[in-house]
Length: 346
Image (cartoon, rainbow, N blue to C red; front, side, top):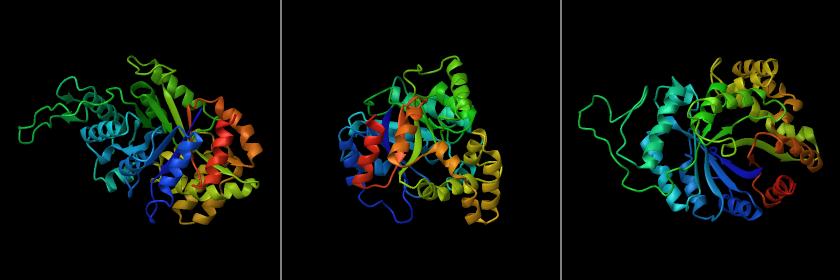
């Protein structure tokens, strides 16, 4: 199991302190990859290009680039550009996000996400393969544009991609989207994963793998999971540092009935807890919502506590579906080193 560093997206303060130092230290310590994401502030590509220019070995991944933010050809252009500049280290991680952001921030239609994802990925692949000018007639996306001035024509990328098979991963939570990732992508990025409660994910991946034309072999399919990791002798203190984050995602990242993070915890068997957290959050009772998250639930999807406890639990994670453990940690040399020792030291 490889170790990746998640930088995520910025908060209102802007770039995190010691950004370049953190990434350089992680590379020296054996972190195999570094990943960025985006919400409604910092984008995923610019910080990744910045840190990529100051590293030499780490793979450079987007843990989620919003498909609604860019035309598929624009995404392909960015991917081939960054892959050239980094010497073949770029990994394109795509995701649909949710209806609030897609419609509210990007002004794009959200539904139907599965069909749009299929069309989007196929167009990106055609640009990267560069076999012929890109023309595509999908159910939801079409190139050239149907209608309009009538002057649009297919184009071939002016730049030959460094890797026509540049890896594309899909960030997915629902079973249909996970199955789609297994069918058409080179990997899956999981936001909430538990090695103790992953039967529904295994079933979705098996369904996607069984579809005609499934792209990757089981050995070649990458599974990356974002896993909070907090080393602290007091388990409750460590859990307390995560409760607010979990409550925000379960309760506030999407309207009732369309919050995919809430649904992820329901599928893991936490419907009663997740529903209480959501209802309290939506009622404006955020402190109660946060307090409603038990430590035992956090321990299912995060690695928290003393080093000996984390080392013992890592045995279960190493035996899981994951190929990369993607950690979001306090960016200090001591923490980066301790996490590397725990995860990579065996």
